[in-house]
Image (tube, rainbow, N blue to C red; front, side):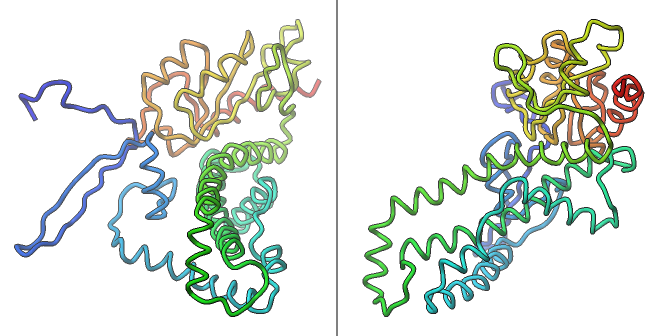
Length: 342
């Protein structure tokens, strides 16, 4: 590696991926390697292609097997769609089997799955050993799997109805092909909306799970309260009125903002801060140390899952403005509850 010019090296974000592929040829095998920056759109495509969980580190995949698994899931549901279409009941089938739940409903389903998995009654952050990891598992793994299944079903039914309509009939292949070509703009719009739906869901999901955790822990808060200049932080603990009091305990209050991914978006919440304490919680493992230091210079504290706090794949370690969710609850919130209840 020595002797290469500095511009030949590319600085990657933390938790970026190294992909190694084996290619067969007449002479045997050869291998190709590439890096995929964790902050790029390509990493999202790869994660979806191989169904990578949020806590993924390393594995060996056979692409053909992964494609076959996805195809089997789709074909199993396709048989149900075909049967409903032949009966002329595809509209009712779509309503009962392929309607995407609201973000609140989907988040609730994910939490129920988590609670059942671990034999718990609530997501009380004071009772959980690793509440930040719980948030990450619920929002980035459990709910993501639920969402993908619902979206797969929803888009499959929409596509069938778009091309074949709701009423059954003996449609020749030539007519199906003609409709596919004629509906290409609508099909493109359908696929685009699926991508946009995935992006918009994540932020709302994380907020719902934090709200549930605050409620389960009996932590007082106000949500989406409008402060000056139309700024609307995600949560204010315990309330805007308390935080803005001119008393010695007012400074124990804080703003808690939630972002599943940060990139440059942390600068949005910095503008909400004013003279108040601001904590920013995220499940993003891709933040560079330089960005963490920038946040520190603006008085922004990061609250992250416990597994990311000391992970070798992240750059959160040794930054004074970074705490785990467990530390946030036990060292920041719990000591101040006595003041917040007055």
